[in-house]
Length: 471
Image (tube, rainbow, N blue to C red; front, side, top):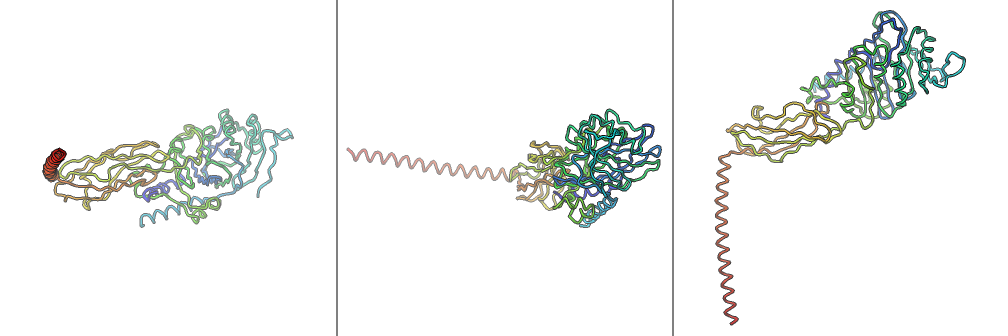
């Protein structure tokens, strides 16, 4: 991965780490007569292939002081839940700022059963976790059957002091969708809101999972579904995730804003020391240097179609090939077109551009042009053609020059380089050399004809001699 895309990510992270976004991490349910605003959210999602650490923080306010219920689906029962710290985000910012400078200068209650208010236990749900952590009153339900979800969820909210709370049919249908996808653990987090915007301390969830999971669609079905949102997701994984995983959800990588500079940056790889500074849990699940990525979404939650789900096959392994002759002939004093083919050999679509380096020390951009210019998208397994138009001045010395064509991706840095010999020739001299070659060839042919005639005559003489001798 190139040095060029990394500093770009750093610049992007510097802007996005000032907590400017709205939450996409769970559904918010509150009294219908009160307006609830989840103004800002930051999430760090770290997944090593078998285990995930999810750190969530939100800023929230409401039209009146009230309690609200935040519901977060998870693919498995958490191994550990703990209060996080804003230091995780601060440390992350400090780390990327340092990389930027370097680049430029070179107690838990036991599991129980949910009381459904009738004195008995419910066959539809069991409680796997209950505790108050900082400003959070957290209960985790393992929902075994969603049929009576509305009844026990409403009763739970009432017992927690949330009166007049209702769960829409859309929200209940969303719960059913999660259950159908075998996502059956739900965090019920009771938090207080007020008319003043305030930050809620982060919570760290650590759980087993064979896929990276960040819930989004449950937010669209909740009371804040029509909120115009900015969602920031910071992902830490062992390899880069395919861009299309995010683009399918209308998320974009901040790197695209800086595509002009993308060839000067490198991906951000986090060392173990840096991981420890961010979060001991994240440090604990990684043994190598993972990659830090960041993607954003702007729009209404209701327009997000799905959750962020990443499997092993969704990691990107970009590769490309450049097809061109090892020697290209360029006439000085005239325009010469050289054709080149770029093929996507990896497992992900690429936004690539072609540029040329090397050659004559004083090689000027006015002496050549590349078409198409700029970034173009090439799907997995497909190829695209380029034309390089050379216009070499007539006073440039003839001879062979080394040049290199490089394919660069907007997301993955430089992918492939092809070294080529450029032979600059003069047309007149080349024609003169050709005429001389023709004359020499004609002379050789004449000599060959004379030899052939001599051989034929000699052959006839020998035949005649043998006939006479036989008689």
